[in-house]
Amino acid sequence: MPRKGMRSICFNPKTTSLLSIPRQPRPTPALLTNRPSFSESTMEKIIESATEMITKWDPDSSTYARVTSLFYEDKREAMQFLKCVNGLQKAMHLLVSEDSASEKLIQAQNLMQIAMKRLQKEFYQILSMNRAHLDPESVSTRSSRSTRSSISDYEDDGEDDVRVAGDSITEVEEESSIAMADLKSIADCMISAGYAKECISIYKIIRKSIIDEGIYRLGVERFSNSQINKMDWEALDIKIKNWLDAVKIAMRTLFNGERILCDHVFASSDSIKESCFGDISKEGALILFSFPELVAKTKKSPPEKMFRVLGMYTAIAENWPEIESIFSHESISTVRLQALNSLVKLNESVRGMISDFESSIQKDSSKFLAPGGGIHPLTVQAMNYLSLLADYSNVLTDILADWPPPAKSSLPESYFDSPDSTDGPAPSITLHVTWLILVLLCKLDTKAKLYKDVSLSYLFLANNLQHVVSKVRTSNLQYLLGDEWINRHEAKVRQFAANYERVAWDQVVKSLPANPTAAIAPDQAKDYFTKFQSSFEQVCKQQRSCIVPDSKLRDYIKLSIERKLVAKYRELYDKHRLTVEGENNAGMVVGFSPGDVGNYLSELFFGKIEASGSGSRSSSSHRRHLRLKA
Image (cartoon, rainbow, N blue to C red; front, side, top):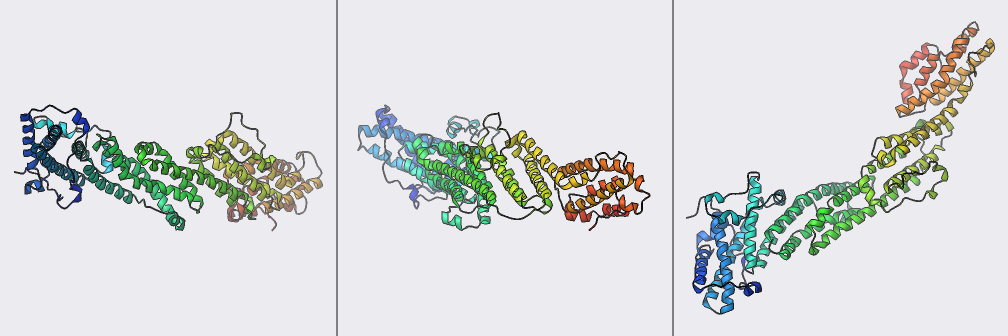
């Protein structure tokens, strides 16, 4: 009677070509050479025992055998079934060598055909009903654990031996281990009996459908060059993001799990396991690894493409050891070749986009003037791009290793005013980034000359170089360029700021006496106050539209101007204000207190919007009867 928990087999061998057995069992020459010596009585016992066991489980002999799974119903009897088949095979080899036309051999051949049909049925069912337990993720999860053979579990006497592996294995891993052991037992038996082709056929059909379904569920599709080129960037970008997620799962679980399962089930034959794995995984792997090459070849080149391409290059490079390991056999070398070819094309694409980026800076012909000497959009865009590139410094080191930047001779010698480093040759990526920033600074120098006011030119250069340095300091660019580069360019910022002060504020500084505390005539003192007020009003009016976005640079410039003006003016004010108090219109002559001067300076470098919005400070100054002429 069937035991409780019996499972039915939804597989009909009469209507399925997978179970057709077109030929007699094939004895192997090796076994003929080392044939065992059986007595006639032993031979009869083997055949009699095999007849009883195999006939019992013949799907055509009874409804019970047709609807019941041997391996699910009684595992110990399943192992005994395999023993009988192995014994029958040995007996057949001996019978062939003695009398190839004997009735016993014909009987044994018929039994072997029935046994193989039964094992094919079991093999198919275990694969079909354990799709969840034999999914690549479950298989790859338990790969590091030792798998207890189903045979060893059921060979020994006693109920205590019928159990699964240790407590640390989860239920899914337990089911996976049992199914894998059963599949291996059946595959070993069928291959040994000469029925490898039938076993492999079942395995390939079922397992390839799982790999193909996995690739489909990961969102990986087969595309042609024309299809990729016709996509708009937004659609292609979604496909790339999806691929970046898919390749991690595919390598970690899908292909790795199938490799583990295939190696385990067909461990008895290297050629069979390689052939099986190749036929199952090759198509899906080629679809997966051909996509990056198509992206690399597309003509679309928005700025974001660089970082998607670098992401794909990184994904393949990081998975390269697994690619070489999983697809190591020569029969699937095309997968390794495709992955390598994608790396090459992605490499070429990155280099091409870096060249295009440099060219776009050099060819920028915009006459746009940043208001108030502020930061030019080109500076913002270029530094955002470079700071993001620095996040991929490891992979770019590999890509740019044998690709030196252009020769220095392509730019004026005046831009190379720093000594070469004495620490040896810099990495290629550092040279490239340094070069690209240098190209940007050269272009900014050209744009600075568009300002009619020389002081604005210097302020523009100070602002833009400060933005460059700030971006370097706050990104991974700092590790590529180093402190020496940063310190050198910060010094250049201060130099540009000093030049701005000299050009913009020199006339105000010169309106004050060299020695403000020296004794002078009232008329001369009045002349100094008048000149200072006039020049200060004029310069403040001119500089109100100037902007310094960086707060540290803004404070640095203000403090520097205050040190040159306020201290000297305070000395003049304290020493000679009373001298001119008796004069008519003295309030118009000494229009500024030292505090007023400081207040006006504090309102500078916020641009027109900021200046007009600083009403409280302006009104405070006006209450002191201070007027800046419109």
